[in-house]
Length: 184
Image 1 (cartoon, rainbow, N blue to C red):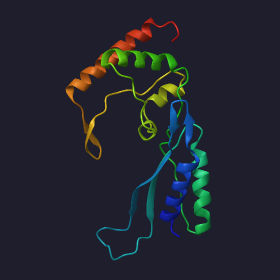
Image 2: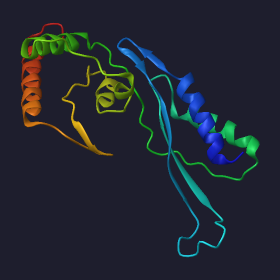
Image 3: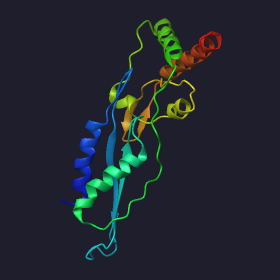
Image 4: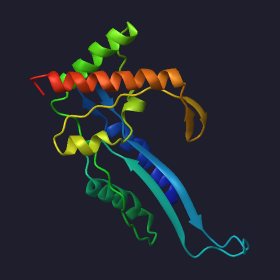
């Protein structure tokens, strides 16, 4: 078994084992081999002496980067392959605490403006890392809310102007509600 296969098997197990059950639903970890770099493109007939594999691991609040590093080391050790591992860009996940008044305001305003209930995100969308983690890490209640765009490419989406206007209305009314609430 090679490094890629070992990492993919570990990733599947990691994604199942470290699901985090939050009050608003599960947060799903994600492992992705995002890039492989090796060899010399101008000399494809040469065997590459070195190959770099870049793995993106998205982990929920209870997991720390050192745990991921130890698990990967444990998976690669039996392969008997010489390697170096460098971890970079570790972004911790954090569950929002004390967000109930903010969520209540969002729900009330959404019902008022649109006449229907606010729908929670699917676990797949709720599990991505967002800037709310920075605020929640500092103890500042933060939640994710915004209009959904239409996907027009692998990393691009478009929003209707009407949806942007409605989102701006929600943001303004939530800000007013937060300023008026005694429980925030």
